[in-house]
Image 1 (tube, rainbow, N blue to C red):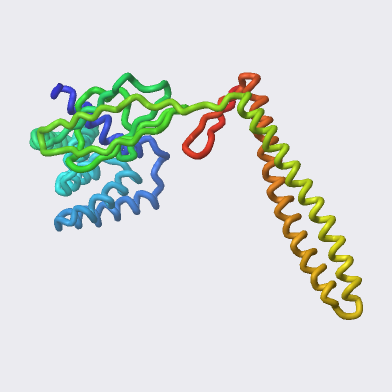
Image 2: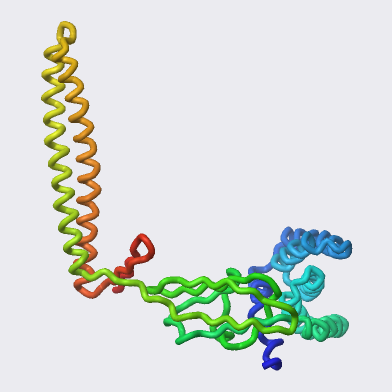
Length: 305
């Protein structure tokens, strides 16, 4: 298994670093910024201030990728204790330096790679029963290639998080600890739980009930509005030459009826809209063109054409 480890670092650790190599051509302004970040980052690293230096070197390499800045970033990460990241960066820097004919850099990177290998920790991720087609797997927010599942992969000591997701299934998150150098942490991912689906019949029935309830709410709103208008008119008559107690009572009753009318219209409109939506989705599902999944406290609609 050890023979596979150098390759794994290049794949699993350095992918975000060398992605910049495929970016658009670097402008003179960007090159100047990258150089400034490099100079500042290297100065900080020389002072042992690795936590401040590494982000600057990483950003410099992202803007203007090159073997020189990548070597310095690897040295910085090594000083910071991020040995898995450093090893992967040294390997990539060695490959770039070899292409450029810089044997001095090749020798430097190789020296660090050999020294780092016995200090690395590993994780071996395995599956219990496989994953659905299209499932995604990430470690600490970074994509983890499915091709590496079942193989030891370098990872720095500490707490890490695996996230697994797939359409139509409940997502899974696993937190684990990677221990001392030379040790391998095994992590097994259980089968993802399928999300329940709503049938067309259930949606149609629910839609009909909501529509009826919405109609009732709207009817109440209309009736209450008529009552409010009538009471208000009667109150105006009573209060034409100074309000009587009867006029005040009618005014209060008009206000109460108006409040009921507003609630009826809002609730009725909301329920009616929901009912129409459920009926429409149910009709689409009945034709086999969609699937509705329950997701937590909500739903997810997948439509196919």
